[in-house]
Amino acid sequence: MNEPVNQPESQISDWVIDCDTHITESAGVWRDRLPAKWRDLGPRMVRTERGVDAWQIGANAQPIPIGMTAVAGWPKPFPSCPKTMEEAPLAAHDAEARLAYMDSVGIWAMALYPNIGGFGNQGFLELGDPDLMLACVKAYNDWLIEWCSPDPRRFIPIMATPFWDIEATVGEVERCAAIGHKGILFSGEPQVLGQPHLGDRHWDPLYRVAAETGLSLNFHIGSGDMSDSFNRDRVKAHGVGSTLVTTSLGLFLGNAMQVADLLLSGVLPRHPEVRFVSVESGIGWVPFVLESADYCFEYSTMRAERPEFDMRPSDYFHRQVYACSFFESHAPQRDLDVIGADNVLFETDYPHPVCLYGNVRERIDEAFGRLDAITRRKVLWDNAAKLYGVGAPDRVWEPPPV
Image (spheres, one colour):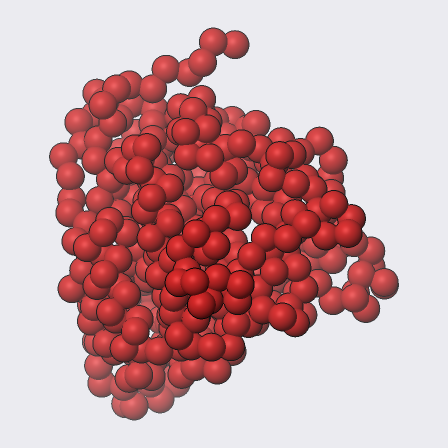
């Protein structure tokens, strides 16, 4: 279980905790860990005819270029990206290099999310065989713990789940909690992946094991159906850049709807100890969603239909839900009284296309520099330290010489 830890102010100083980053998976994640009978059937890295390193999952899925997930510092605008692992930034896939990068920008700990398995673990569905899919989930989770081994204090591994099998999911959560995972990656809209809605009792075993282990359930953007996220007709009519921006906004707002669904699902009243995190969606949408949910809750028949609701939806949010801020400056400065300073986490999304890079400390100062010291520390350190069980740093951060 993630235990609260003592946090001496003198050592925390200007360190922050980054609650959303990604690892560009290496070629051996599944090749080196799957049983021999599945080694050629699992996800594998290939080099395309154009010389691009890409992941192939299943026989019919389109290869996924590794560079699309590793663009931090790339000199050309996205969707231009590194072609090979050699061109990708070393800190995208090497733990020692990641720690050095973290030291350079004052990030003590980073939460780690996947790329290839999907942001809701849905990528594994392409494999078709449930036994193979489960083996791939386990292989990824084991690899992630190994990747963190250079300094487990400073990494927050977020486990993948075999969500298509509730019993296997519960077993994997128990196993991963025991080996050091700190959170659970789960879809905020499982219904689009052929599964029951969040509020269905089907998921109660997952919520119970999350409470028992103290692991949060993390809804990363893009955790549902992304088949129409880069629509060719839109690209033809509006252009690549416009479509990329529209797609990003759609993903942010998609998580807003997932949180709204969660607030009205009955899950939070029934499972008061479980914590949920909306990842990479920003926080600016939160005041509108909370006000709308409360308003609609009061005029609807929900109070009569759902006696388990003894509070407003916004009250459940403040008790059990977090959201992550990264590029915003307006909401952190003006809306924290509505959102709740206890409900906000900080992230950079390194090394993805929209990540903070080369401007991390500047963005922190712009967004949070005017907050009082207590509120600033909550958002940049305390909330995440409590949620993920991060211990205090062993030294004060010293910015590198200019």
